[in-house]
Length: 537
Image (cartoon, rainbow, N blue to C red; front, top):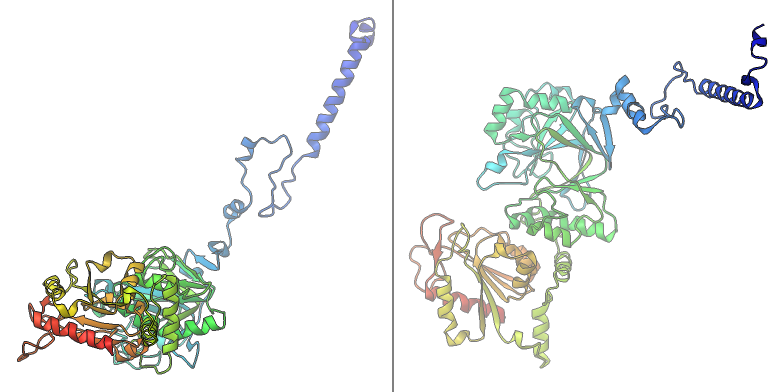
């Protein structure tokens, strides 16, 4: 038989039998292992679960061809919410129609006793692009998209067109003649109102040809115009607006409004907003060394609030769950009584004196006078009167011609031997700290009219300020501000017809208000005499 054929063969010797038995065991084990790892393709795959783990036999290279997790969601068709991402309290919408509908609220005064600081809810902010083409340019204007369900407003085809001018509008309810033309409220100073039912509705409304022409005519072209994406900031945000091109205007239009609130927040050790955004100047509170930004940084103007970086993207709209608006120009003329007090301005300046390590304290002259009455001396630096001058000759603006010649002649006069004449060549080349130091060390400042005079906040109490030009229009020279500073101010302007040779005035090169000018030696000497007398009072 068949078995008998192998009965006497070597195949069945003990060694061979052992090898066969071992092979059978290995085959059995391999079959069992294979059956235990069979994948059930009928089982559901959970998004985000690691369904690709097929045991130790899988190599790294083979796993690269397997798709799982979030990528699996996108392959099978992700839900609408997958296009909404949130990071650091900001929601990013890749399409405006993905946004949850918003209904705007406000503005509401944050503090009824102060005014100037308003709270809006669920609004968006745009930039006025035409303002950058004006002369002079303006960087503090914004548009506000206000969402409403009021059908009467939504039926108005011009609801999204900003008013031509909001200057002089104190508060949201202030009336403007342009309301009759556009059929909606204009907003308030620095913030032009536009109305819509949604972001998509607003974007469609402003893109209409007739509305585009009207915005261009009004100088109110907004950015973005064609919205692709929306950034919605869910945490309370402060809108920082100021004119980058004029520090004097920035200080009075923004800071004088905000200072009372700043003091209140500091006293209560709590700021009501978590972030700050500024479309006026990128990185104002972080890396930018603009004069006004440096002041805000040094006084810790916004407490622990973080600055939001913004993108130069003409297709992204910035929206806010809560937006704090510091009304531009609310306290420009310091006409709101008891808001900016001498104590408040003094506290603000004292912080700056410490931060910039200025050598003379605010009360320097009072201390000097008290020391003199007691027969004490404060050192040789107080044995002379220091006056700093600036002629603006290195700029393209108004220049004081022959100022150096006038100073050289005055230095030779015996009566001015105790007067130290110091000139500043180019204030724009000085850091904020250097500008602060030069004003702090001066007893009097005589300069061409301009924004460099904003450094007056670094001067000690009792300083005399003189601005010179064919026409001087100054916020620093406001008598109320000088009273808060315990200082004096004088504007020296164009000589009028019939002025005699002793008049302290300037001779202008032309009839233009910003014309270059000079001054006679007699007029200059009389000016210095008057300044010295004012310091002796």
